[in-house]
Length: 97
Image (cartoon, rainbow, N blue to C red; front, top):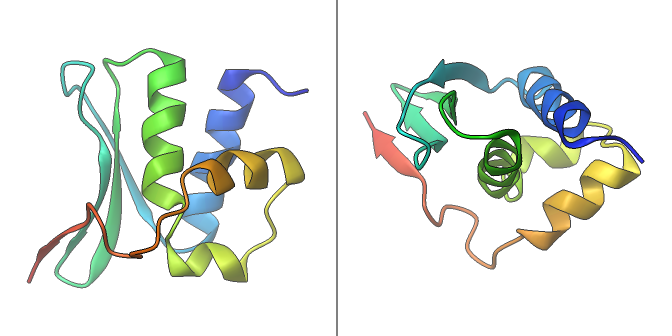
């Protein structure tokens, strides 16, 4: 099984392949997530959080992203994303137009 760092790198690469822009920012260990700014999905990864928290926040943000369904997802990553699937695809997403 892949380690947390490998899984995080793979999720980040998946996001990029699916057209999500990435920003690594120091957010005091409690931030991160997906937002849409001027039509572009941007995933903020909290650079001050530990790897487990970054993986958790990234998986939560990507779990319901519609583009993920159009990309190949490794089985171990699919399992992680499935844990965070929500009924409402836009829950927790900020939109700034």
